[in-house]
Image 1 (cartoon, helix red, strand yellow):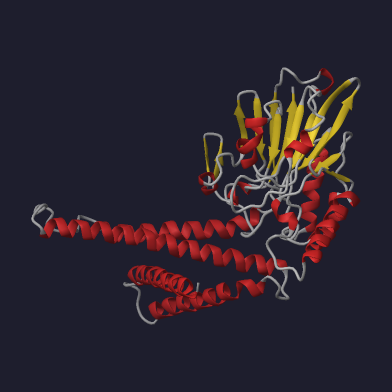
Image 2 (cartoon, rainbow, N blue to C red):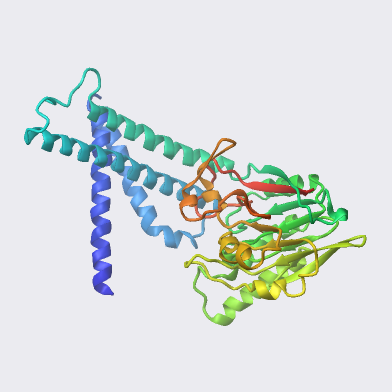
Length: 416
């Protein structure tokens, strides 16, 4: 184990050295025509920022519990992540360019491409272009991540209408608002969150469904926000399920009893806010003589790195007689993993979990995010035969305290 750790450390140091070599070389290149002492000042500022960045990275675990404000902690996280990604992108682009140059050089000296002669063309040489492109691209990503911090509370209402032939008449035009992944441990603007709740209530939903991750780790994170989320109301009620973060799996506890008590307190918070927490069970919603079944399962994942606590069979038992079924399941991998394989009469599944990675492109003609390489269903509406899955992009944020291209979401679904 110790040997593996040493190998890992050596690999990390080599990668860091390569990244720093390329980024510093790129900076020296673009400042080569700047007069002294301004050039030295710029390089010195870069070195100072880099050293500060290294210190912040090494102290990141301790910063989680350090006595500092959430805005300062969020800024440090954003800056560190943005600086890291920028450096890696610059180094990757320039490394690819060096590989290209090496390949052309090998061809030239082997006599295969004698006509190449020189790699310098009119205007900017190809190497000059790559350096400038790398810096521009990396700088754009860094700037985007800093700007993304201003999008944390820019809630977007996504509206869609879904038609089902088996929907009971009394439930036609039913207005459902879905929210997911609040992550109160990351939130630091109570007024902005309150405006989001006002937006939800202004939609006049008949039913509000929350699909998990109220906290990052501990129930105490939600206490400050209880008065705000208690204001959510709908004639048919507010229902909720647990997400992977709600179980406290990602921090160390003094004992298993302490961890279980944390979960029990979180369940009590749901109840105290007037939310009906569904734990592998279903409820029957009724309008006149018509009914539909609302199922809710604990976190159920078909990805190895996430724990499964849920039991859909238990939640489903007794619901078969109802003509229409809605399932709340936090992790969208559950849909392909079990729902549309074994429970084909569950008409609509609502999930969250992915946050849309909080980074990507989300416009009508193009939807892309790095998370799509991990999750087949990661944001928006999906269909298989007569079954639908909707993946909410998340109300809050986790890790990176911002949103680039993928904005926080309030979903309004109207059944027709």
